Length: 105
Length: 349
Image 1: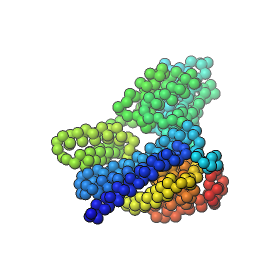
Image 2 (image 1 turned 30 degrees about the vertical axis):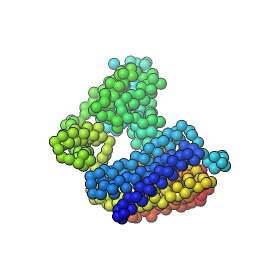
Image 3 (image 1 turned 120 degrees about the vertical axis):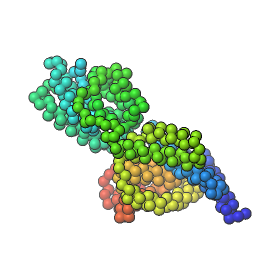
């Protein structure tokens, strides 16, 4: 394996790992707010790592630029969407889950 | 003919003064004994959920009040003047939205006539949509455009800045289209030009507002290049923390909502900070009202990081340069002035 292939494999593996964390987080966390943490951010990083792997795979190609642009848009739109969801929830008066209310899930 | 209840939507414009004068005149001319009332309303485009209404709105309404008092002169006693903000709890995107909130106000106050400032042109009005006048008439109101003298409009030459914005936006869109398309075939050149025109036509009024100061922009971009790796590093670091928390058998989370006033001032820095906060795992921006942030923090550590102000300092560094980065962090500021109602910060101090 060339160093580049190793880097690609590492990035892809990182992407899979964080996507897994995001999925586990959605299942385990108690309420909408905490879940949207997991859904938006671990997922952003996962997608970012995967796209970085894609960009590296293509090497110097137009596809690399497109992958990088996708990455950029991902980093702009994902937090915006998470914010919109959380804000909508707050407007609806959904109370965030806190430690005091329940000790266990 | 104008009725006795007259509604005038106001926004800062060159003809507003004359529109107010015209409305006052119509009220004076109304039949005696009808007790006319002038309603000056300011439709708020953005949603204001927390805090005071926008300052420029209240200021403008105060100014209008003063003008009306001047215009009415001796008749001031017999003519009622009301000022109001409408639609603060929703976003107004197009003339239909404006007509909705104005119509609702009109219904509440038995208003039948609207005197429209010909230059009334808040954000959301575009040449592609039916004009506000049509939408208001659809809502059952009599609309009269104030017959005021407006400065000669040599559209679009009179708005050189606007035309420049249009050109810049078109250039960006076109260039981007060609970059992503990857070819310079005739077909791409033609479709790109059409797409660029559509994008620029739709968005030139709302993007690239204001003049661009090139040297300041260059400084910001340079510091933004420094900021990006820092942000990526913060994101990566924090993601490992979240991975640890999520995969830990006991799920050691302690979510809390934190509120604080950030020491950043204009739109773009606030947006950058809000997005950075959301991107950094463990913290999620719920609401921002000008400088006041409401943030949901997943763990105690994330909360401390947030109030430690590293991100805030970095954003200030990008937009205002190195000297501004040294302002105390939110936690320190809070320790200095323990006055505002900040429910959760006390626990961490």
